[in-house]
Length: 307
Image (tube, rainbow, N blue to C red; front, side, top):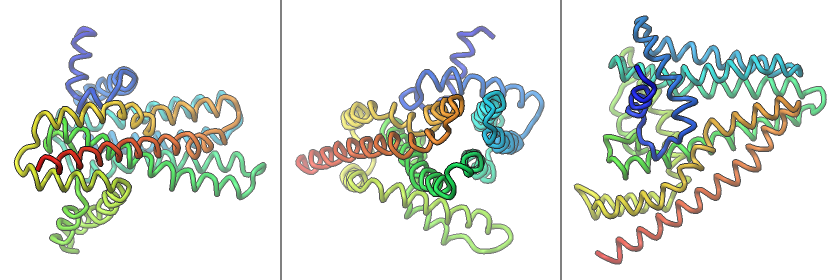
């Protein structure tokens, strides 16, 4: 397989080049795809890959407790390795058709485990100097800032894909629908796990919707006005407005965040990572949300004016 053929195959696994840049293509997706090919040849189940990703990523945090930069390098390599596997499990599932609810849950759970471990061991490293304050800062950084940043970025990507490719190419789920599915299931031995998942996933989608009130209004107007198909010119207009924000959603998720984490560890000041999340990424989240909400409100007014 030539490099050009490899690139085409990896590009075919992307949801859209709008939402994933060159860095993700070459640094994350391509190694993940190669791992997926190997796992397919070895008949490894995608869930096994996800579990390995969780273990490797959680282990990475342990190596960030040390003040020795060489030890920190081991943790950095493990975190990159875990991210390759996190990418590979989804690609492998699509290659083999082995998609399961458990796999989806574990895949979403993986990043939370990684960063909980990272925050925990950095706090242990800094506790002697900072005391309880580093735990408070880390908790605010992780449970409030990090969680909201990733949730909003994920939501905006799915909104963009929904306009670009429709429901088949997006995972734009609605809170009301998740609650309907939740109430349809029963607390029995066959359905309890799925029901529990729907409860927490429903809460997650509700949080995304609460952060985006003007988009929710636009979404309702679109469904009321265009019951079957949104006009192509409106889809193009939304894409042109949304596309500049996709680079910010990438910053709000994994790569830039981890890059700053690595730099803060190498300079011996891991607290910089928390400050970056609280100050820089929170500012970017508010800016991205402001711009997105503004053009959603403008599009809503334009649609209603033409009714």
